[in-house]
Length: 507
Image 1 (cartoon, rainbow, N blue to C red):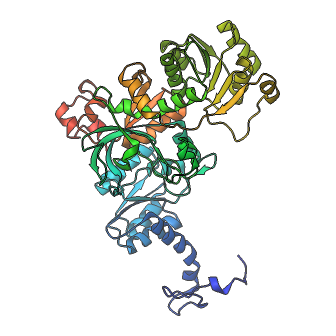
Image 2: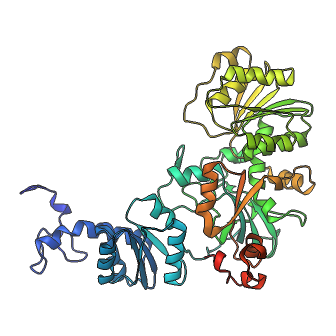
Image 3: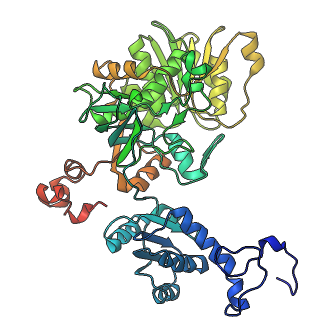
C-alpha cells in the first residue's frame, strides 16, 4: 500500500490467458480491475482445487470478496448450480445479482440445518464446498462431499460400507488437522474402524465374493520391506492406512480396499461388531506386547473404548485380577460391569505415586503389567511406579511428543517400557473371539448416527459422552426405522423406509 512498488518482472502478468511475463495491462482493463487479479487468482485456485467442472453443484460459504469472486469463477467454469451462504443480507443480494442460484442467510441456522437447506436447494448433496470464511460453523456445514464410486485395481474389492467407528485419532484430525507427524494437507476422508459388504471383486480375488460381510484391516503394506518380511508390517514406514494422511478412509458409501486385508465375518457376527474388530485388534496387540498371560495381574489406565476392550481381552486370556482407572465415573461403572476387579477414580491432580500405591493396595500386590491407554503423563508415571520389578508398561494412548517418565525408577527395577502401534496378524483372532462370545463388544456401542449426521456424532465423541460411536454409512431401508421408531415420529414404518419421515429426512 504505497505509491511505488518494486516486484519481480517474472511475476507480473498481462491479462491475456496463458501468456506470461508481460508487464502491462491491455487497454480494456483498468488499474482497478488489475488490482482484483490477486483475489481472482485465489478463487481460480480454490475452484481448481475443488474440481469444479461442467455441471458441478457448488456450495460456497461466505459472500465476501473471495466468496463472490469464487461464485463468478464457478459460473465461468460452467457449474450447473451454486448455493452461497452468509450472515449479511446485503452481501447475499449481491451474490444473487452476480448469478447465485440460491442464497441462504445463516444468522439463525445450525450447521446441520444449513447442510439440509443446501441439499434441499440443489436436490442432492453438493459436489464440492468452497469455504471462504474460516468459521467453524461453515466448515462443519460443508463436511460432506459427493465423490464418484472408486475404481478397482487387481487384487481389490469394492465394498459397500455399513458401519464405521469414530476413534480418538479421527477426532484429533477433525479438530486439529494432525496427529504427531501425520498432518492433513488436502481434503481427507476419515475412518479406519470399518465393516461392509462386498459389491464386486477384481481379477485375482478368490477368497471373497459379492455379498460377503467383511471387517477391514486398514493398514496395508505398500512394499515388501524388512519389517513386512519379519511380520511387523505395522512398522513399515510406507504402509497405507485408511483415514490417515494422505490416504482416504472409509467414512463413505463405497470404498475400495485390498482383498487380502478384508476378513470375512461369520454369520453370527454382525457388521456393527465387525467395525469393532479394529479397536479390538489394538487391544490384542497391546496385550501381546505386554506378554499378558493366564493368572497375571494387570493395571489398565483409561476406561475408554481401547481400555475397556483391553479389559475384555485380559479376561479372555485368563488374567485373574484387573484394576482400571479413569476420570469418568460412568466409564468406571461400565468397566465394573465388564468384569474389572477394581476401579479407581482419578482426577487431573492425582499424584502418580499415590495412584500406584492405590493399585498395589487394591490388589494386595504389584501388577505384572500396566497397559496405558490414555497418553496422560500421570498414568504413564503411575504405570512405571505400579508394576513389579521386571514388569512391563505398554504405551497405547496418544500422548504429547515428549513425556516426563521416571526413567531411573524404571532402570533400577528393570521395568520394560514398550510402545504399541496398531497391530499385526490379529484379525482372525479378534473375529474368532467375537464369534465364540469370549469377547462381547456390543455393550460398548452407545451411539449410532447415519453418515449425514457425522457432525453430531463427532460432537458426542468430543464431549466424551458414551463409549463407542458408530456411523451407519448405508442408505438402507433398515436404517431409518431403527433410528426413528413409530412411537417417536408418529409415521408409518413404510414412510420411514421410503425416507418420507419429516423428522428424519436424511440426506
